[in-house]
Image (cartoon, rainbow, N blue to C red; front, side):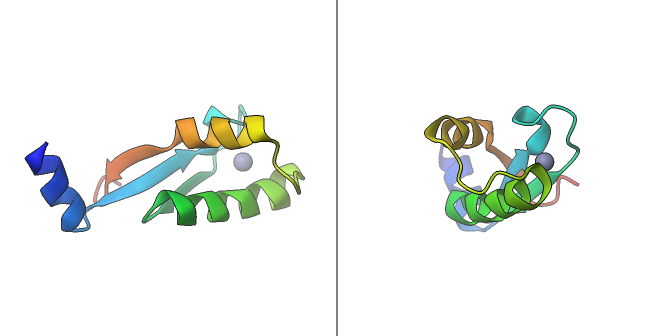
Length: 75
Ligand SMILES: [Zn+2]
């Protein structure tokens, strides 16, 4: 728990969202420093690529549950 907190505070953890978890077959992967930023960036992708201008509550929940926490140097 403490190690995770230290990693978080040192800024080495980022949020990752794989579009294929929501839209099967889409290879897009979004990264962001926090969920709010990630969500905004991902919604821009969803609007441009998948044509969804107003996400439903169900889609929002899908997105929130698909977010992972990864090390910034993972890729
Ligand atoms: Zn996509």
